[in-house]
Every structure is written in structure tokens, then in C-alpha cells.
Length: 159
Image (cartoon, rainbow, N blue to C red; front, side, top):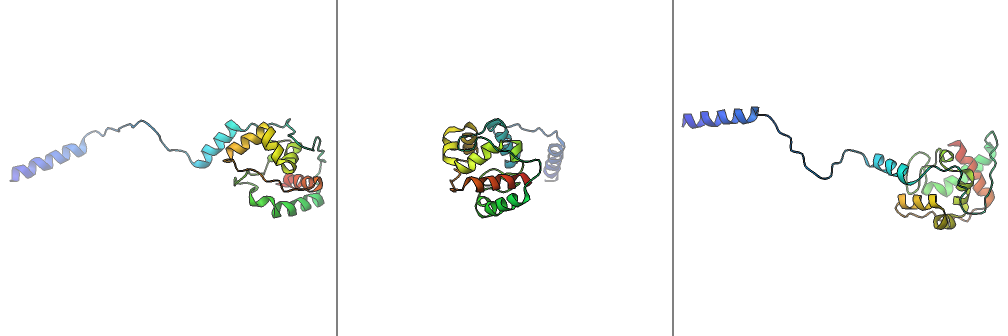
């Protein structure tokens, strides 16, 4: 009986001290966060395009050298009432984060997206790519005036 216990103890020691072999399994490996994957997909699928003016009534927007604070305040009020449901400044929600939007899109494109989301989603390649990226969550037409859209555009410059 003592010999059996000694043999089992010696066997346990030998197995415990043996070289560990890592088994590599084929297939899926999760090592990135969801946000990293989404950001990478966004870079691949939705290009930065400052020349695209979009589809809609706006063909030209002239931003002054300085931000018009009065106009931006009006835009912030409208943004806080309507846009905040889907867009935050620095975080993806139902729609894209809007901080730095003018580093990715032209002012005309932004205003046309605000004023004519239906037409943009049907005809504009960037709007179509964004629709795909955001799981087909469409931007609803809020029936804003050009003046309201321009005020929101000015507010977005402050983000």
C-alpha cells in the first residue's frame, strides 16, 4: 500500500513538473474590444471626403474665420432638442459622433444630410456607407429650415 502511494505521488510530481504544451486551436480569437473593431471597420468602409457636397439644396457654405457665437447658440438649442437623441459629440450612438465632423465631411455635405437625409441615403455613397455601418438606422428628416440647419452647422464647429 505504501508503495502504491509512493508511486502515485511520484507520478503526480512528474506530471506537474513536465513541460506544458499549449494547444493552439484554430478558429476565432477575441482580443480586441468592440469599439476598436467598429472604428477599424469605419475607417475601411466610410472614406473621409471633403470634396463631396452631398445631394440636396446646399451647394455652398462659407464659414467665417471666427465662429458666430450667436448662431452657434441657436444651433446648440436645436441640436439639444432634436439631434441629441441619436448623436453625441464624442461617442457613437445610433448615429456617428459629431465632434470633428468637418475633418471628415464638407459643410455642404453636413447641411445636405440635415436637410435631405432621404435623398442622401438614396444617392450619396458616403451616406449609404454610414447607413450600412450604423445597422441601417436611418436619419429621419426633421423638416428643418436652411437657417436652422446652418445654425446647427455653426454649432458643430464648436465641438
